[in-house]
Length: 276
Image (cartoon, rainbow, N blue to C red; front, side, top):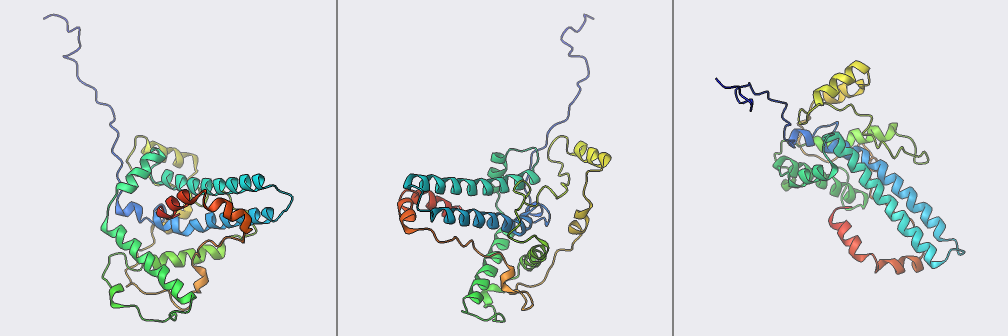
């Protein structure tokens, strides 16, 4: 038999095949890496944005600055605020899929459709609307919820527990005068669990165990039971101010504001559609 020069008779060696990343309800609703963690940590971004806007308002009152200088300062402040928001979600996506790019992660999240996620979003909106009605005096704290809100959802009560966690975190967080670490936002302190979606996840986990870099503070969060209570307004013992409030921007001189309202109308409209 002639020698097999092409190597067709030799056994084939199969290498490791990368797995396709997938987003699941359990991943997005995870108390450590999912949407609840975003809700509890986004207040840090909002606090930093308010601080930047306050600094700009103080500088805008300086009559020695020219109109062009004020315009450049306003643009720089807005760009810096947008960079903070972008960095926040980049770190969050890195926690979900460490080996995926930010663009791929956002596309997967935007294309993901789930009934549980829609119901979770609806519950958060209902709680925020109820909180604002209480703050404006439209209803009382112990007002009854309409029958439309008493739907039997598998995620009822998760938003309430998330708000309690946000209250506890706010009590333990530093005051607004203390600068937050803009490179962390609370994500880098969370120990990443292997999801098995990319090559090397198991190796990364083994290396963390050998070097002792894993954090033990996520054990209690991972083992926390998922609540199954019915949808209800926040308890009276929890103050309404504990929930994250909308960003309140400081007063800016009318002469500066009017010059840029028309110029950035299109950009502001796009930001509103994106929920920013």
